[in-house]
Amino acid sequence: MAVSGCGLLCKYVLIIFNILFGLLGIAMFGLGLWLRFSSSTGGFFNIDFNTRQFVIGVTVLILIGAVMVIISAFGDYGACSENKTALRVFYFTVGLLAIAVILAGILAYFYSDKVGDEMSAFYTTVYTKYVNKEDPGLSVTLKIFHNALHCCGIGGALEPFARDTCPSTKGFLDALSIPACPKVIQSCSRPELQWF
Image (cartoon, rainbow, N blue to C red; front, side, top):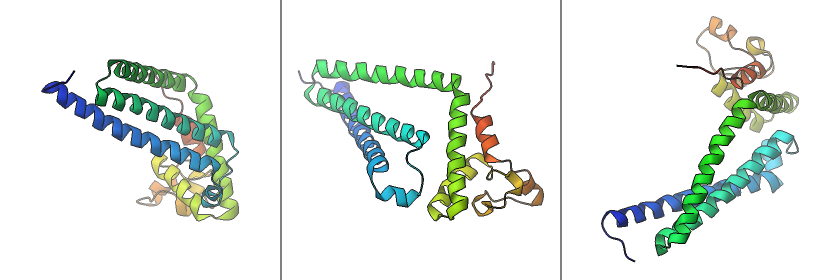
């Protein structure tokens, strides 16, 4: 059954979308496998890869990448061959993925204290390793945390060990107002419910 007009446009849009979705899934899957199993990443990042936070994060990255590849394969096959069964499986799995994202958001909200504690523990681990070794790879990780959250180390404004990774400030008073990162991570993980 050949499609024409708007159906043909939708078919090609679906094919292009699924190719891009599949490539992103392959990249996430490969990055997760590389981070988890490569011996070179240990020296590159100099992070303890056996921490619970890292293992959970990388496992989620691998699983999401694999699911994205499977979904895009059904979508591409269904769109190219105009197979209704494959398209139904594709739409069903995309629907399940949307429900999973909504449930993950709800669970992240309800368990935000635990997520904040885990992220704070991960930050403290990276910070401690940076202070002990002065590794440039860890300074990049700390700069990402510091600039994204506008915080500095464990001591905040009086941080002596990681001052070079702290965000730039406009003046002395602005430098004194920079908070400690574990406190900021904890406060970010406890969102207040706002009613309009």
